[in-house]
Structure formats: C-alpha cells, structure tokens
Length: 145
Image 1: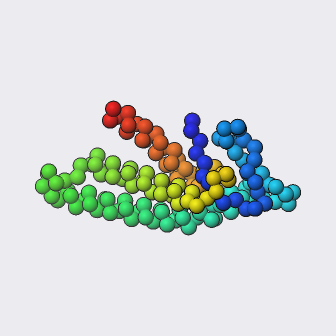
Image 2: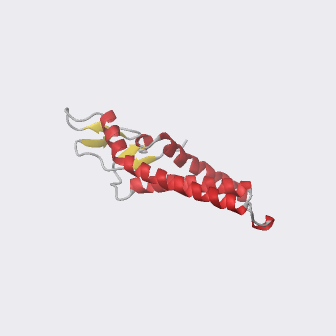
Image 3: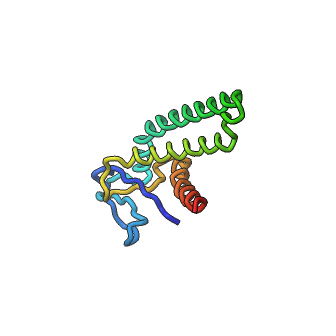
C-alpha cells in the first residue's frame, strides 16, 4: 500500500528522524527534553489547517449544490439536453476529488521537503479521498485501455 505524507513546517524544537531507509515511515521526535510530544504537534497542525479545511468544505458544498441545480434544471429540457443520473454522479465524484487534491496542494505549498508529517493531520475523510484518488486514477486508466 502506498503511504502518502504531507510536507509541512515543523516547530524548531522538532526534527525529522527515525523511519525506514526509504523514508516511508518518518516520525517526528523532540530535539530537547522539554519539547512538545507528537500528540501536541498533531493538535497544533489540526488547528493550523482547520481554516483551510473549512474553506474547502464550503467550496465543495457550494459546487455540489450548483451541480445538483444544473442536474435538476436539465430535467425540464429536451431528452438530448438532459443530464443523466450517471453523468450527475460523475460530476459529484469529480468535485470531491478536486477539492481533496486542492486541500493536499494547499497544505503542501511552500513547505520544506525534508520535514514530513503524515496525513493524520487531516480529517479522515480528506486523507481517504487522497488515497482513493490514486485508486480512481488507476481504475480509470485501466478502463480506458
């Protein structure tokens, strides 16, 4: 299974350490005895990204509402102009994936490449969406082959 990591700015009293040689399981360790522990760091990161998630949640809800309105409006049109239920569901899935990737990109922008925190700093639904996107892309590629 592929593990995804977010790159993020880490407080100066923390350093990246441990993990496997390939870098797939890096952990954050305090560099001084009085430093914050991992749970406190994760709490800090959750608070830091809370506004980002709220912003993108509102955007997703708005885009889903617009897609639903377009679908409902198309039902009053001629049959060839109507949007099918499967097209509507595909629109909804695309919106979900797009917002999940935009959250991921926003969190990663302008961060140092040597400091990592895993996806636990995101809400579980966003982290799952990022993982599901890879599965979706592979399935879509195989379907078109």
